[in-house]
Amino acid sequence: MYFIGIDVGTSGTKTILTDSKGNILATATFEYPLYQPQIGWAEQNPEDWWDASVKGIKAVLEKSKVNPEEVKAVGLTGQMHGLVMLDKNYNVIRPSIIWCDQRTAKECDEITEKVGKERLIEITANPALTGFTASKILWVRNNEPQNYEKVYKILLPKDYIRFKLTGEFATDVSDASGMQLLDIKNRCWSDEVLEKLEIDKELLGKVYESPQVTGKVSRQASEITGLCEGTLVVAGGGDQAAGAVGNGIVKTGVISSTIGSSGVVFAHLDEFKIDPQGRVHTFCHAVPGKWHVMGVTQGAGLSLKWFRDNFAHIEKAAFEFIDKDPYILMDQEAELANPGADGLIFLPYLMGERTPILDPYAKGIFFGITAKHTRREFIRAVMEGVVFSLKNCLDILYEMGIEVKEVRVSGGGAKSKLWRQMQADIFEMDVWTLNSKEGPAFGAAILAAVGAGEYQKVEEACDTMIQKVDSCRPNEKLFEIYRKTYKLYNSIYPRVKDLFNI
Ligand SMILES: Nc1ncnc2c1ncn2[C@@H]1O[C@H](COP(=O)(O)OP(=O)(O)O)[C@@H](O)[C@H]1O
Ligand SMILES: O=C(CO)[C@@H](O)[C@H](O)COP(=O)(O)O
Image (cartoon, rainbow, N blue to C red; front, top):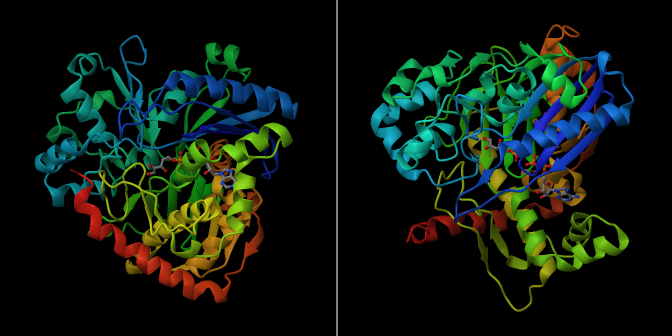
């Protein structure tokens, strides 16, 4: 039996095909643009996600030579929080306002006022945040009433792919948690929040636990994708929860640190638990009946990509001549700089910042530039700044009393040995890599295997399908320089934060 996992990421959609033991037979990634019509805005075109998913499914079927009849189930995952609105003819009404868009500060105030700050945290386990879907819905209602009038269904990114594959309107508890409309403790839509925000429940899909089957591939989707009509489609999860399943973060003590476009530190919770100050998110996990807590930095891999696209012309040119990934060349360059980048510090707030500072107006900073600094210190400072922002989230987890015995790294950033080592040195802990680097897509395939009955429980599937392969040991000699640099990093934002919103 075979399973397909589809991850609708921010930089592209990744599709993988695995067997039931977790061997990956084929992978395919198709990229698409991110539109930034104004500073702080971020949009993508849901049709691009569907095109990339169709191409991905076709590619993995072709590369693996697996007979589509042997593909038992498809699992879906993707970037969380993005708002997809369909009209009654199932057409997309406007581009999706995605997770890193920061335009909704006013709507967050509106949510806090209507629901009440404490009650909102009690129900949704989080304060009102610009990244979450509820404020994006209100923004469209307040600013584009002509679009809001047309809304028939509201979906999350991966759930749009589900609709295209099966015709069903559905979601799962982990992704729905990021809409700020879910009662997180009771794992269902909150009638109270919906009523107070005057959002009709009929607009939302049915909520499932992540391994549950939500529908089957339709004849039309079968003709487009090459999958067999009737192939099962399971609920899946938000990319962080599915990624955690793909990394085996399904029990306490083991956490993950992911550098994708965003950066996330993620821990499993057996019991519902929140940070009373709302500095990190508590959401439903993709493991039925469990929760998780995570800290999110908005601009992690996104920061390095921004640097590559704007300042790494040498590496990009080299790529054309010697066909070497510019990121690998940038890594080599950064490795030549000293740890601590000779005092050059980068705050990665290029898309505002989520946890723990929760500031949509925050902006990026290079601090401490001198004539001695060269491009290599700049690249290194970007990478270190991202790890410091992840360490800020890790510190909150420690404050909450969460046990951390082991860190597993994933996301595109985990391809870099230097970035993995920096995490070990700055977290002062061993960091592990796994057999699969395809975190969320692999997690979605695991959820598909559970949904199809190949395994009874997510934990059992993880035990069989995931292996640890390699670790980076922290270098104690670097603790002092990184501790000193981290202290300085932490003292910059509080001193300048009032200047960002002028
Ligand atoms: N070889 C590499 N070295 C360092 N960083 C890398 C490398 N390859 C990819 N990345 C980083 O990974 C990011 C993409 O990660 P990915 O998990 O694919 O993102 P997403 O799921 O958001 O689309 C890029 O923005 C880049 O910063
Ligand atoms: O906003 C969050 C999680 O709350 C992000 O993690 C998005 O889900 C996007 O993820 P990537 O594209 O970086 O994987």
